[in-house]
Length: 171
View 1 (cartoon, rainbow, N blue to C red):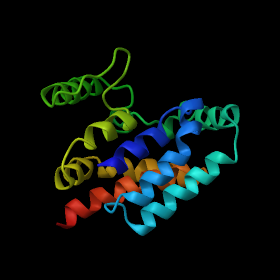
View 2 (tube, one colour; view 1 turned 135 degrees about the vertical axis):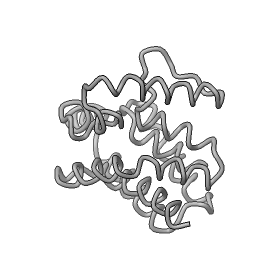
View 3 (spheres, rainbow, N blue to C red; view 1 turned 90 degrees about the vertical axis):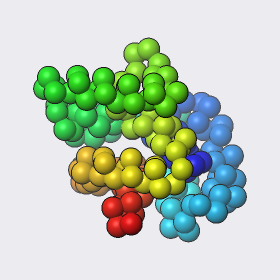
View 4 (cartoon, rainbow, N blue to C red; view 1 turned 180 degrees about the vertical axis):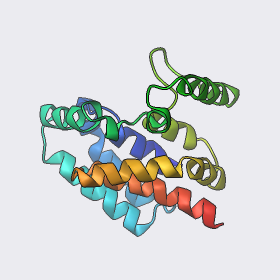
């Protein structure tokens, strides 16, 4: 699904290419019938917020939000294990899951990085994607709450992902 790829890109470290592609992202939003009206509005609001900043400003905000605040870490197993030994096996299992599905994790990347997870989820059918996200629901909820407490607009993207996971649990 394009929605997950789009959110993955919006949650990844911002670069000039991101800013260049924002108009294309809006076109994609308007053409994808699998994206709800509320999801579309939320993402367009985030895109408008991004457009109000230059690349340096976006990068500073990103680093302050995700790199300097452990409670906002986009590496999901960090929220479950911290630096505990249990995190290693979880990362290996997730990496093996990706490999079995034909997705290679780049060198230096951890498989629990939310934009990478969303790239993987985008290759699944709708119900599989929702079930996979449902498995991460508790972590997504905590992450969204932490970002909301900080007043981060990124929290709204996490809420979209969280909402899709909730729908799988309701089915």
